[in-house]
Length: 585
Image 1 (cartoon, rainbow, N blue to C red):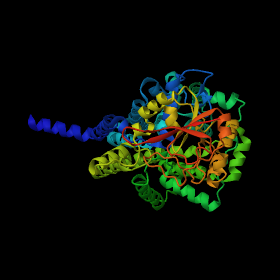
Image 2 (image 1 turned 60 degrees about the horizontal axis):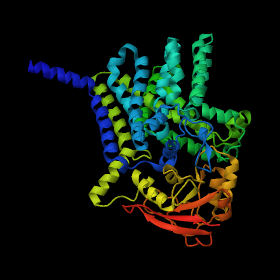
Image 3 (image 1 turned 90 degrees about the vertical axis):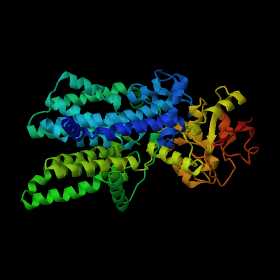
């Protein structure tokens, strides 16, 4: 009996070994991020300086579900310009405190990625699914843990789910699948993925209709259902895009125009490394494996004189799809092509249609899965080789210090502090937002909703703490306000050409700029500045309603700028010092 039990346990472990790394990693992530809590180190760029502050502002103002109201940053912007409440990710911030919601979002993204890949792979593999189950789960795991742009992590992770729904509708056009597709935008995002998904679906409809010599009615219906779902879930966005007559900063954004060699170089870079919003680390393991397999596979077709099968091979089609997305990304910086697209479809002016690159992590992982299931059909040695490859692909993601790898950053910085007896220069979540410090300042100056601005730090810190800001970060707001704010910062950006180009040609970050450095905004304990003077137009600041400036640098020309120092405030742990100025006059 004992030998039988050993045998059963061995068989169970052999069959379900993949559950251990998956469950272990989820528990590790939850343990670290909730264990250290707000002393964890969270990515700042396009994260703490943007969406987390926006969600907190919606909580502070109770504006999640309100209409016809403004949110107090950038001088007051429509609530409709911020993320929709009809999003499962947004709803996390309605229910939970901001930090808790953020960590839950990271964990749920992993689960969504695994579920999405599992459903798609099970549908494609059919009866052989149980044979391939270990690598299916592990590839889903590898895909789910990719450190995507956090606010849109659900949108990235759910791409296989959308493909699965299309397959179900194509094979079994039932009402339940259409209803599920209508609800899919709850985990997606139109500007990053939805428009491209609809575009790819149109191509699929045309291709299938030509191949089968009849209209693919089920998929045509899917197109309208999914489009309707996006309109409903992101009604605020569509309202602003289609029915608002406000001219936005998108109308003046200037995109780079690269030479042909520069475009080729950019295509090669994103083919190898993707971009920072979707760092899948595929070049470490997946790309070499795919490269070797590509050569072996196609040489075998040539050797067997079956060259015609090369263009029909699913793996080759995936590689071609990846290359196509890279080409689109590079050609976006070819000015004549971009102008042509924007002329034909004016609403696309300033909109980045090169975001097709966001689909490549999914395609790389599907290519890997295809290789692994084929290895599983070639004997026990090939099976263990497949298991080794997929485990290596997982480890490559976990151990890569990418921009949004908060688990790596937290473990690294906390171990450094333990090992050296001193913390790293970076600010952790609690130190960055400095809630206690800002509460003390607000009480001391008797803050009552007056407009303020930040210097040497992200305005998001003030916004998170319920302080209305004239400055801020948003990719879609009124051009008129950008022009008005420019009057404030003109003395600075007209001294630093890089800052002038950055603001005039883009303008999403309406910040107070340095008159000597390209940037003095710091997410660390240390602020690097070669000049302690402030360059603004005080009168323009007051005309927009500005009252306070919260600065990490004490100004040597405060009197000249008509500023009165109200106080110097330092956090209890010494991580942050703020100087609060009143704009006189």
